Length: 230
Image 1 (tube, rainbow, N blue to C red):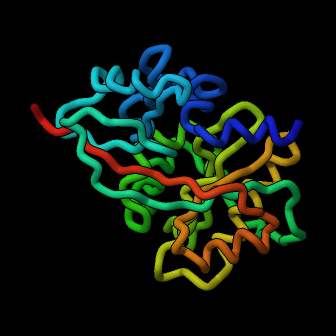
Image 2: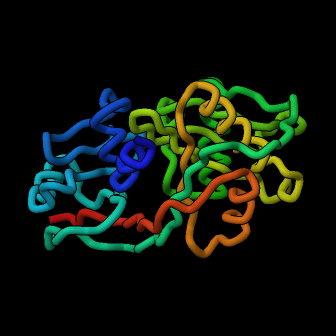
């Protein structure tokens, strides 16, 4: 049962866009994308890879976007900018990790600070309204938002922990670990399995997630693409 449940993660964006997060989707029965301004991710039904061309209608000229997983043959006017090989990890049980009372539940009033911090550390994956996809939590020091973690793609019964980042001036204080644990604990208590993606080359982060209880499910690539102006 658990194994079948996790099969949604072979195509996580599609699974989210066709279930829990369908209100944020545009597209057709075979291709979908998150609404522009929410998340620069698109997806296609892996059972019908030849229909990916239909996604072209939902992209602007020169728009940069991401696909996850194996790529089918692409339209000639789509450029592959970069492959990002990632480790997909899931959390069946959280380790005993203490969290600080200073963790804040961020709101729309924090959206500019969230956008600025995340794009300072991890540019390109987070847009101004990405926070609408789930709950985001942060730590402030002297009024400034210095660390954050939140929820992104949510297939049925699953929550992607994302935007885990700390201002470089405040690293080494355990903020990322505490925030990740906080997000995971909330989801586990509500019956959802946390999962995340991390660059295969980021061994330090993988080690931190393993200490929290995450295990490797599979390797999966994120593809950064661009629709070339015609």
